[in-house]
Image 1 (cartoon, rainbow, N blue to C red):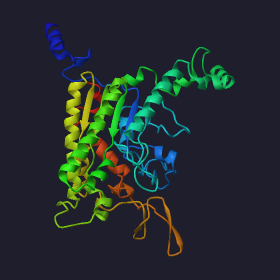
Image 2: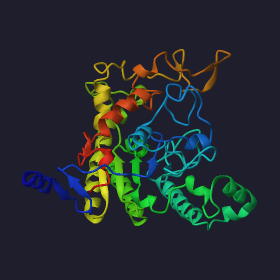
Image 3: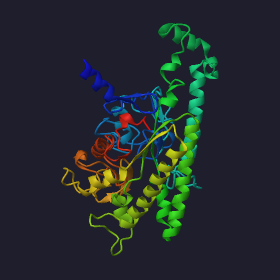
Image 4: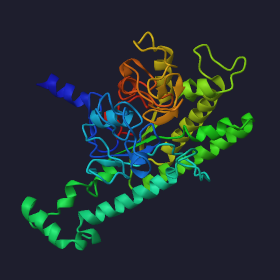
Length: 400
């Protein structure tokens, strides 16, 4: 008995937040919701709902139909939801069939951290839903969710007959049926806040010829990102899972469209100048996250080196069972890239940018976005903490 008591005493400790740790291992976090901010790497239907619907064959591998994602299946944010055992996070802008009990996704394709003057979207340029707008959407979502939870919303008063009928059919009279569709007030502070944004900002940095100017530009972008984290912290957010940006120079679109010059490609075929800009962004982001930890003592911030995971997949694609990573799957009509699922007239005939015969063997879906298979591989390697700072799995990301 004495020996057992001694083992228990030595094996138990406290993590500084009032949570007990057993044998040096933190208990899994119970995240009730995910709130995601980002671009097309994690857009689960926002741009599709706001502008033009994403077309099949997007979604074909996993969903069997277009599902608002620029991918043949799941995105990393979907695998995060699965890992945390919550429902896939619906896009905030998608009003049809969406439920937000387990969070909301504010990411939209072509989004940026900085807000740029742009009048050409969606034909080109950047999304109007920059990170600042996504934060505004979150603020409104939180405020309205709390009002709905406490029966204080005008939405409940607009159609009292309908609400009363739903109450009588499903709930006791004192309960609010809308609570099953939205997070509770306490869920916002217990949720996981995920970020995958910055890649589109680098398109601006790529155009800056001076290295010093590019670094200064990136510094400003990181400053805006830092302010976003601080704002959410003030709103009660505590657990943050932050992806750095991927190797943009390894995207097939970069290799195809970049004006190649001697020594521009690395030994794997990636556009080196673009990857150098991405490295600079990631270096500054990591330093910023480290600094934020000192400023926000109650926050748990995990920096995730998605760049290294993606670069490993691309540079070892063939060894891992994939085809040439610079050959993308969807969007080609013959030898002409017209865009995945898009239609065009070529030589008087209407054609559609279809998909390849085996999407699961490809890393790149459409030249810019990753396939379902690639996202699954990346997720399997980043969610276990192997590429994280601190090196903890996402299931323990609530601990600082």
